[in-house]
Structures are given as structure tokens and as C-alpha cells.
Amino acid sequence: MFSLGCIQALRCHKNTCPTGITTHNRWLERGLDPKNKAVRVYHYVKNIEREVGVICHSCGVREPRELKRRHARIVSEHGTSVSLADVYPDKQEGIKLKQTD
Image 1: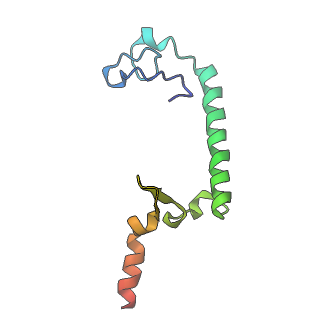
Image 2: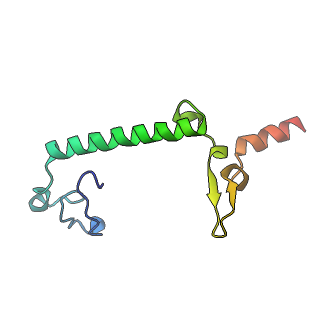
Image 3: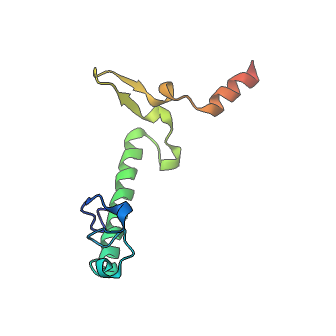
């Protein structure tokens, strides 16, 4: 939304978006230049793609689909961290455990 020009006017649900992004009002839509915004969105997506690649590399995986819950940690307000896999165990792992018992 920011790459399109969202200014967080919080009017998305009212059909009165001043930037013309979330409105069907023709007069307000004039502020939205699709050719200019398309380039901005393209660059935003390319940067996100690059950053996700950096995160994958730092976690020791080659691509995003290899990321698992064990790669993320939750830091509490006390400064301790716990693996996301410990907080939210994978349902399939639970099924595998039941099948082997």
C-alpha cells in the first residue's frame, strides 16, 4: 500500500481515500497514476524478494519454502526467546509421533 502512495488516512472502508487507492470515486481516483505506481510497486516487490533471500541465507536455507517454524524465535518482554516451533508445534509432527507409538 505504501508503494502505491498510501498515507494511512484510515478511510479505506469509507470509500473516501484521498490518494485514490481504495476508492471507486472517479474524482479521488485521479490522484492514482497507474504507470508511475506500477514502477514503484515493481521495485518494492523486487526489494522484498531480495530481503527474503537474505533472511533465507542467514537461516541456512536456499529458498523461502524451506523455512520452518524452528527458524524463527519469539522474544518475550523479559528478553528471553523461545523457538516458534516450541510455542506452535507443527500438527504434522504430532501426527507422525502418534503413528509411531
